[in-house]
Amino acid sequence: METLIINIDGMHCGGCVTGVKKALNHAHGVQSAAVSLEAGQATVTYDPTHVSATALVSAVVAAGYSVRTNVEPESVPVQAGQCGSGSGKSKGGCCCS
Image (cartoon, rainbow, N blue to C red; front, side):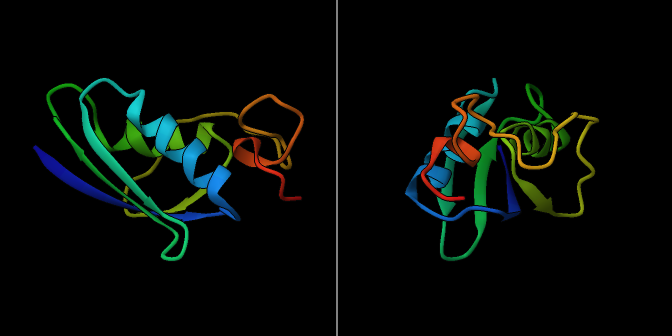
């Protein structure tokens, strides 16, 4: 198992945290994902034989958030202001604007 810390921009509330955690936990090979709103970070324990660090970063980007890390995300088209949940609300389906 390996651990990756992903610095995340754009989380504003508990709904954002839930959205990021859900996106990470859906990746095959993730053992655990802890997301901190206050720190703006996700700490992910994963099996690198099943998922890459790049794929984990891409999952966060696909959920509608920006990341600051040494890992370059795979190309994932995300339009500015687009909700990652598809609910028409802000990122992660939260109530923030």
